[in-house]
Image 1 (cartoon, rainbow, N blue to C red):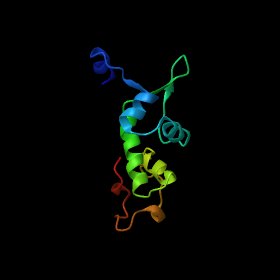
Image 2 (cartoon, helix red, strand yellow; image 1 turned 180 degrees about the vertical axis):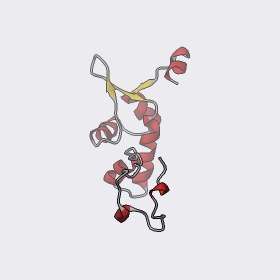
Image 3 (cartoon, rainbow, N blue to C red; image 1 turned 90 degrees about the horizontal axis):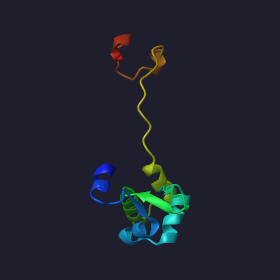
Image 4 (cartoon, rainbow, N blue to C red; image 1 turned 120 degrees about the horizontal axis):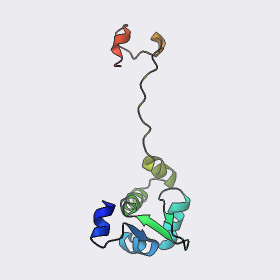
Length: 110
Protein backbone atom coordinates (compact mmCIF):
# COMPACT_ATOMS: atom_id res chain seq x y z
CA UNK A 1 0.00 0.00 0.00
CA UNK A 2 2.87 2.38 0.81
CA UNK A 3 4.23 1.98 -2.72
CA UNK A 4 0.84 2.88 -4.20
CA UNK A 5 0.63 5.94 -1.97
CA UNK A 6 4.11 7.08 -2.90
CA UNK A 7 3.41 6.58 -6.60
CA UNK A 8 0.36 8.82 -6.20
CA UNK A 9 2.52 11.44 -4.50
CA UNK A 10 0.99 10.80 -1.07
CA UNK A 11 3.22 10.30 1.96
CA UNK A 12 2.63 6.98 3.77
CA UNK A 13 3.13 8.78 7.09
CA UNK A 14 1.50 11.77 8.75
CA UNK A 15 2.94 14.50 10.93
CA UNK A 16 1.59 14.99 14.43
CA UNK A 17 -0.22 18.12 13.24
CA UNK A 18 -1.89 16.23 10.39
CA UNK A 19 -3.02 13.46 12.74
CA UNK A 20 -4.35 16.07 15.20
CA UNK A 21 -6.26 17.91 12.48
CA UNK A 22 -7.73 14.76 10.93
CA UNK A 23 -8.65 13.07 14.19
CA UNK A 24 -9.88 16.10 16.13
CA UNK A 25 -7.45 15.36 18.98
CA UNK A 26 -4.94 17.88 20.28
CA UNK A 27 -1.22 17.42 19.67
CA UNK A 28 -0.67 17.11 23.43
CA UNK A 29 -3.28 14.32 23.60
CA UNK A 30 -1.45 12.47 20.82
CA UNK A 31 1.81 12.83 22.74
CA UNK A 32 0.04 11.51 25.84
CA UNK A 33 -1.44 8.54 23.93
CA UNK A 34 2.02 7.76 22.63
CA UNK A 35 3.54 7.96 26.13
CA UNK A 36 0.81 5.54 27.31
CA UNK A 37 1.64 3.11 24.48
CA UNK A 38 -1.70 3.50 22.73
CA UNK A 39 -0.15 4.75 19.50
CA UNK A 40 3.38 4.70 18.09
CA UNK A 41 5.43 6.89 15.80
CA UNK A 42 8.77 6.85 14.13
CA UNK A 43 11.20 9.74 14.13
CA UNK A 44 12.80 11.55 11.23
CA UNK A 45 16.47 12.50 11.14
CA UNK A 46 15.35 15.85 12.58
CA UNK A 47 13.56 14.02 15.46
CA UNK A 48 10.07 14.87 14.19
CA UNK A 49 7.30 12.35 14.81
CA UNK A 50 5.80 10.53 11.85
CA UNK A 51 2.72 8.36 12.28
CA UNK A 52 1.50 5.62 9.93
CA UNK A 53 -1.88 6.39 8.43
CA UNK A 54 -3.40 3.51 10.41
CA UNK A 55 -2.96 5.58 13.57
CA UNK A 56 -6.13 7.47 12.65
CA UNK A 57 -8.21 4.33 13.30
CA UNK A 58 -6.46 3.70 16.61
CA UNK A 59 -7.07 7.28 17.75
CA UNK A 60 -10.73 7.02 16.72
CA UNK A 61 -11.03 3.78 18.72
CA UNK A 62 -9.43 5.43 21.77
CA UNK A 63 -11.77 8.43 21.56
CA UNK A 64 -14.92 6.33 21.28
CA UNK A 65 -13.83 4.00 24.07
CA UNK A 66 -13.08 6.94 26.35
CA UNK A 67 -16.44 8.49 25.51
CA UNK A 68 -18.26 5.38 26.77
CA UNK A 69 -16.23 5.31 29.98
CA UNK A 70 -13.52 2.75 29.28
CA UNK A 71 -10.22 3.45 31.04
CA UNK A 72 -7.00 4.02 29.12
CA UNK A 73 -5.53 0.87 30.69
CA UNK A 74 -8.43 -1.20 29.36
CA UNK A 75 -8.18 0.49 25.97
CA UNK A 76 -4.47 -0.29 25.84
CA UNK A 77 -5.21 -3.93 26.60
CA UNK A 78 -7.77 -4.07 23.82
CA UNK A 79 -5.33 -2.57 21.33
CA UNK A 80 -2.53 -5.02 22.08
CA UNK A 81 -2.14 -7.74 19.48
CA UNK A 82 -3.72 -11.03 20.49
CA UNK A 83 -1.31 -13.78 21.46
CA UNK A 84 -0.89 -16.46 18.83
CA UNK A 85 -2.81 -19.63 19.64
CA UNK A 86 -0.55 -22.45 20.73
CA UNK A 87 -0.90 -26.14 20.09
CA UNK A 88 -0.50 -28.39 23.11
CA UNK A 89 2.89 -30.01 23.48
CA UNK A 90 3.16 -33.57 22.19
CA UNK A 91 3.78 -34.84 25.75
CA UNK A 92 0.66 -33.23 27.20
CA UNK A 93 -0.89 -35.68 29.59
CA UNK A 94 -4.54 -36.50 30.26
CA UNK A 95 -4.74 -33.79 32.93
CA UNK A 96 -4.48 -31.19 30.16
CA UNK A 97 -6.86 -32.80 27.68
CA UNK A 98 -10.02 -30.74 27.09
CA UNK A 99 -13.22 -32.13 28.53
CA UNK A 100 -14.99 -34.43 26.14
CA UNK A 101 -11.85 -35.04 24.06
CA UNK A 102 -11.14 -38.68 23.22
CA UNK A 103 -8.42 -40.38 25.27
CA UNK A 104 -6.42 -41.07 22.11
CA UNK A 105 -3.57 -38.70 21.26
CA UNK A 106 -4.89 -38.64 17.70
CA UNK A 107 -7.36 -35.97 18.89
CA UNK A 108 -4.56 -33.42 18.43
CA UNK A 109 -3.81 -32.62 14.81
CA UNK A 110 -0.20 -32.88 13.74
